[in-house]
Length: 153
Ligand SMILES: [Zn+2]
Image 1 (cartoon, rainbow, N blue to C red):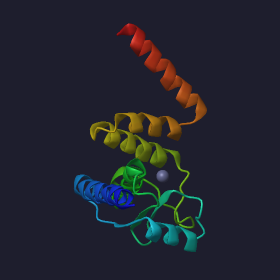
Image 2 (tube, helix red, strand yellow; image 1 turned 30 degrees about the horizontal axis):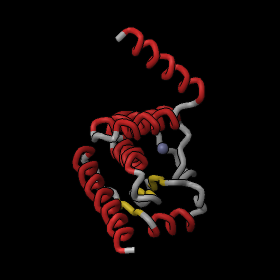
Image 3 (cartoon, rainbow, N blue to C red; image 1 turned 30 degrees about the vertical axis):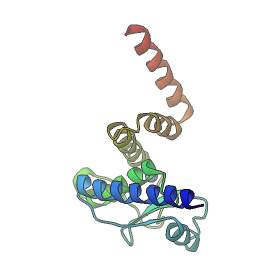
């Protein structure tokens, strides 16, 4: 019992550390909610099914599970995109609060999460995250590229 609690504490501690690091790297300072607070935030706004999100209206990043550090990276990148939307031409249309299907923004956030994981010694997680974030065709292009890479090396 105590062991489980410690483990959970460590997950949250790690989450806090990465949050601070990302705020520093990206030079943004959104409110970050995790765990029950995040669940409540998403539920109240009708986004029960999401694992996380960024709400531009309140400048809030929410991540349900503290162990999902790359989801945190993805959503933190959305906070950065919003902050830099004029400079880099990221569109944040009104209407949808949390979900954006605009591709460039999603690719950018996914790529950032991948890079963050890769550089933070979460390489396997990074690859899994990236494969999960691209569409099926994209996935096979990457698998094929990796195979060729392997053969060439
Ligand atoms: Zn996104």
